[in-house]
Image: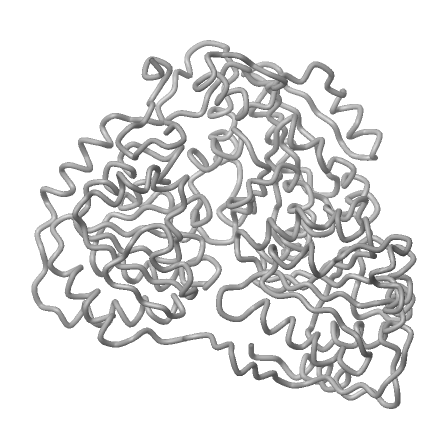
Length: 585
């Protein structure tokens, strides 16, 4: 990272504090050295020394959430929107356990975060002390790495290493557990400028021979296809990807986590693949002869049944920063472990030197035939209030820089299908873990990270209630996000799967007692709106978008029978798509 003179001065000042510092003061000094702007957290007894150090300075701003899960999701949303490290602070015991879902969410989607937790004093660890739990043991499976700091002198090195690990290679959350006696102990403070870990390295450039093999395979392909995952967004490689696609003219598909890595309205973009992807994207994935996978992990929700997927004779090129992702679910033919932004440019350079270009006319004709199925078409006649219509109306009112933060459910899939993202880091959602409740705290983190951008939270009546208390955080700090709640009075995605796979036995998927969301928003001090008719949608959305100085909560009561189509049943292959109700059988 390149720093300006003011940033360098901050780093040098924080790294060379005169005299001894308390462990808690070291944490704050390290955050300042890492140019951390915000920390999201919730205080508790063990963490109070850190809070005491925070309140005595003005460089690192603490945001008090209403639940530790909200802290982790807000830090996560900040990181997704900015590409910087999100930082969260929790106390011992329930503070740590409340943070677990947020840590796991970030780990699944490779989000750079540093989570700092206070613990009981070292002499009480293992004694079942008040608010003690095995924080390291609990978080080890859901972090990139975790630390228990036993001596205050270790803190500077551990914190520097935590930030380095969070951002290098495949990003992810790093957990730092600090007992209370370490927080109140003193030692000289010198923050390292760099860190070296002998057993850990992060490759940059791809192997030249492998890149040449990939270029040769792509040049010979008659049915090439580019499969883009969230790694392209995390690597800030969208420009390199656009350069490559402009060069070769291949069709491309972007996964749920890769939306925005390539313009959604470009005709070469076939849309999202997988369980709720487009017919043309999935048929192209199944029928291609050379598949170039960029920063994608062949997730089960993307490729469907892995045995059926692997039964097709195709050449697979897989480029990823994480060697453990290569051939994990699908055996690949040409693996390349490297930084995506660099290696995509390397690949484009080699393709330019290949004089012959294949004729893709037949391949595009096949794709055009699949597109003619119009799998995302819906009946917009009459007064039935459909979510697809609402989201298309929203897209017309906002610019390409608007950030959309989504909860998890049917509304998430409808946004992915109909919104058409044009730029990376404008689509923030939980992909791998599928965590309900992330939307509002994601919006808080994204808005603080990108204050110049409008931030809209798209949620459902089920998801919003999981972290709705963070409306209070919005009011306290003047964080003016916009909330669009598509209310279908049910846990829509659960209900859809019960409809498809369980013969309509809707076990506990209907919300029989919902709050008055308008009054609830107003009770938190915000603007509340409700729409129940199709004709009122446009004006309400305009109010939502154009209100800049207040948080607005717009509830749109949609048809509860609306489904997300297409759909692939669990365990089925890409060619076994359900395009509508008639295909259920």
